Amino acid sequence: MKILVINCGSSSCKFQLFETSTGEVLAKGNAERIGIDGKLTYKANGKEDFISTEAMPDHKVAVKMILAALVDKDHGVLSDISEIKAVGHRVLHGGKYYSESVIVNDDVKKVIRDCFPLGPLHNPANLTGIEACESVLPEGTPQVAVFDTAFHMTMPPKAYTYALPYELTEKYSIRRYGFHGTSHRYVSRRAADFLGKKYEDIKIITCHLGNGSSFAAVDHGKCVDTSMGLTPLAGICMGTRCGDIDPAIVPFLMKNENLTPDEIDTLMNKKSGVEGLSGVSSDFRDLDKASKEGNERATLALEMFEYQARKIIGAYAAAMGGVDVIVFTAGIGENTDYIRAAACEGLGFMGVEIDPAKNNGVRTEAVISSDNSKVTVAIIPTNEELAIAQETEELVK
Ligand code: AMP
Image 1: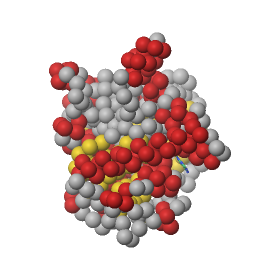
Image 2: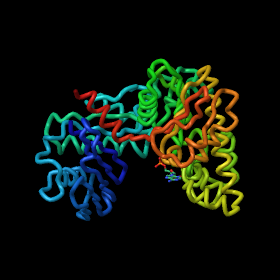
Image 3: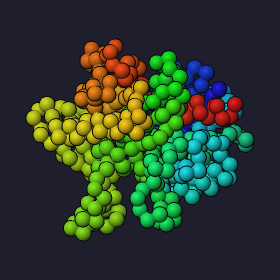
Image 4: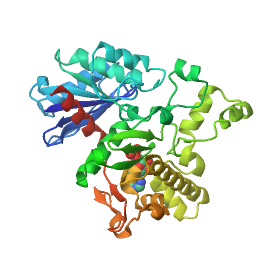
């Protein structure tokens, strides 16, 4: 089945067209600078890449241009737009309402709209993308919303509630929601398949380590805890996000640095994390290089990242009363053997033993724990777009 996957930002629209029977990406690209000037980059199997700088005043025009490229006689991969059987949309926030992906109708759009305050940068853009596709694709083409938060909705109240005045948590729907859910679901299921284990029989800790990093405790197929919170700022320190800090630091800095709410928000989201700490970069390749050259702050940033990852792995093993499988994924999880090794260092007491010969330099799907390790540690590359396409197909079938 041909499924188009759309990930809309406020001024961009990334897309991938999948043939789900094979998992093949037939075409992909990005419409950027929507509402500014417009730039469409497009790549398709066996065709020449192309870039268009035609004006893109809004998302509807951007989607029209993407669809035109997909059926173009030179670059296209479809003979008719009706070959697209459904569109899967990445949607950041489904609030507490959705624990699964859903076919979009008016009620779903209302929920996405109601969650604007919880995902102010993403949800409005996600809804715009859905409405643009509805208005441009043949009537009746199903649109599916795949929420970043959905996988975590199985968490129990003790894991998702914050100890704030209860009336306020209710009034503003303040709770831990968690993010990267599509990735955590995909890699945890894939890990069970890959290892020949039954998903519903095991305890898995998934470590999605990328520019944004999050962890999930998946107990017998259900997420029971995750490290991101009301927003994707919570958890371990990340590329530019501070992660968990003493909440009293917020009013302290606001008072002493005379910062507005927006300014402190930017400071914590964009100027902190390993970049803010090291003064070098948010990219672990740059940090590794700087650390090897003797930059002490880069070394500290790496050590903090590793230490915080290890603490969460230990905490989630405690939360589930054990762990059978630990999964590493995303840019850092898939590519940096030394972070994987350090995040598991000292966890021998709970049966985790990495085999350096299996871990070093490996970037593909693989078991990296030793034959004696009680806990299996694996690399499972994530593929959020393919996961969205598969979930979309399951729903529309
Ligand atoms: P993601 O958000 O999953 O795309 O991950 C992006 C991050 O992964 C980058 O900022 C890097 O820190 C890290 N990364 C990606 N590729 C590599 C690599 N080959 N070696 C080390 N780190 C990498």
